[in-house]
View 1 (cartoon, rainbow, N blue to C red):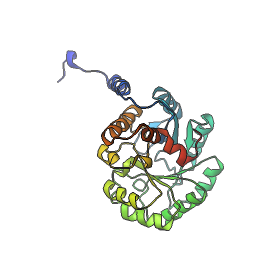
View 2 (tube, rainbow, N blue to C red):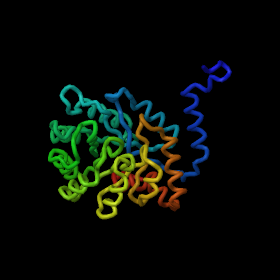
View 3 (cartoon, rainbow, N blue to C red):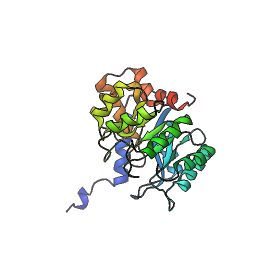
View 4 (tube, rainbow, N blue to C red):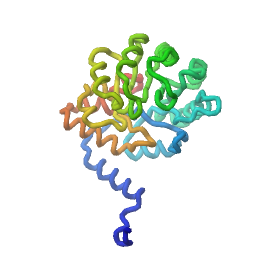
Amino acid sequence: MWGEAHAGVPAADALAQVEDALVAGLRLPEGPVVDVHAHLGTDADGHHLDVADLVADMDAHGIAGAVCFPANQPGDAGDFAAANAAVARAAAEHPGRVVPFCRVDPAVRAAETMQRAAADGAVGLKLHPVAQRFALDDAACVAAVADATGRGWPVLVHAGFGARPLAAALATLTDEVPGARLILAHGARGDARAVAQLARERDGLWFDTSLAALPDLVALPPERVLFGADRPYGEHATARQLVALAARVAGWTPAQVEGVLWGNAHALLGLAP
């Protein structure tokens, strides 16, 4: 049992101290960092993030804009309608800071949901094959990605824990929708080596850094990598530190680091620099 003299630092204070220490030692280039991976709302697992807390976190860590989409909060109808509308409202309240993506279950009125979200200002799609229990080569998923691609939207796909294997289904999906632009979350750590090999063979696949494994990021071309934090599961300071470590180990040039932090996202999402 810990005595009072050895009770340690309160968890919230300890996290703040760690973040401050990481930020102080980053030596990353200054610029308008874009986070491509943030959830808003209350997830089925209990994690919660509202837009005010996200923006405060962004201000504290030099994040100019964040791609936001609903947490796993599909609602009684299962179509994410209310959650997508909440993200659209957050984007309207914070123009330029919140970049709205919608979320769908491909099996539940996906086309209708995307049409409504587009009218509300959505500019991309989020898919979570694990939470919504589908495969990337399912007909409904292919149709949803084709719909998004026809709208000019990139599609961010959960590709982390619980998502293996991925490469074969991704190959089928990209064959079926050749113009698709897919951002594989978490460095595709659910099937990282096979997916990285697939990305060498075809265009249209990018990777975000959120909660990724350092060796996986080092093995990727930085031109295909986008900064992500996975709020509220991840933290911006540790996400920046991961990029700094990957840059050091892989020998990325300053221009390549800038691409990871903001340039690649600006190009892929059509954002103004």
